[in-house]
Image 1 (cartoon, rainbow, N blue to C red):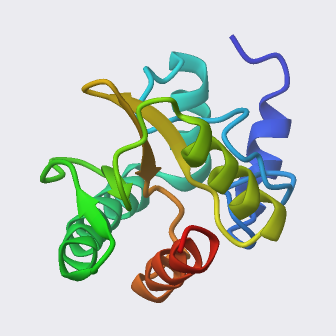
Image 2: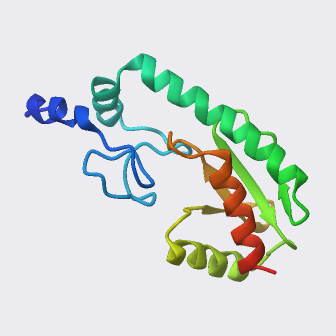
Length: 158
């Protein structure tokens, strides 16, 4: 399946800086890699296991789940945010402000977040409205980053 196993082995110096786990160190912003809300391709998963190992991958997954639960609590305590479910894994969908049934406001705010370059938040459809979705699978992400996300949303969407 892999013609150049040496390339896979050379990726042991996987970058954990920035906003993605990336062999190149480049932020992918949701364009490639394992997605927390999509089926992983078997080859990508195999390569990831070769690079980081199953123990470390398991620790990273458990940390992402824990962080999603902590984010849920942070959102629940926020005056303007509402978590839309209790996370079972590392995904948390949430609303900021009033429901957005057209998606215009949420998409505009998401572009504003992306332009700032500090936070990446996806958008999803949830029961007829457009909402924010986080997939917490970047090991350097902390509760401080998530707290900053909520504060930034408060500034961008007063």
